[in-house]
Image (cartoon, rainbow, N blue to C red; front, side):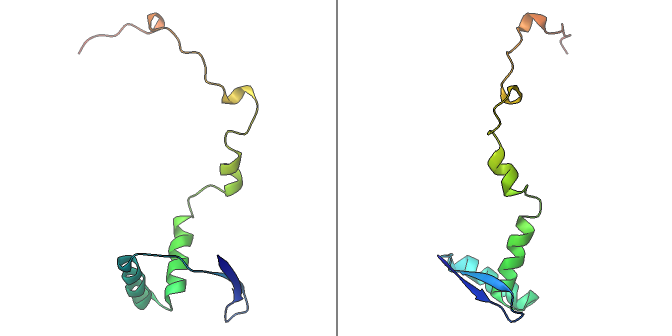
Length: 88
């Protein structure tokens, strides 16, 4: 469940109420105190950084949805065609 609110700059932001362990809450409190300005901003920055290297959701949702031969697993070749190797 979330609500849409506006921050001090007038930007629209979502407000969420997650349930977290006490030790995670303490980590967020300490991190926000060190880096400021508040726990919400601190957690927001952590979440943004955790998603920087993640592909876009549109791409993730499309995986496996193509109906063409590119997604078929090729037939496995017999071992008899494998190159002869030397024992080390």
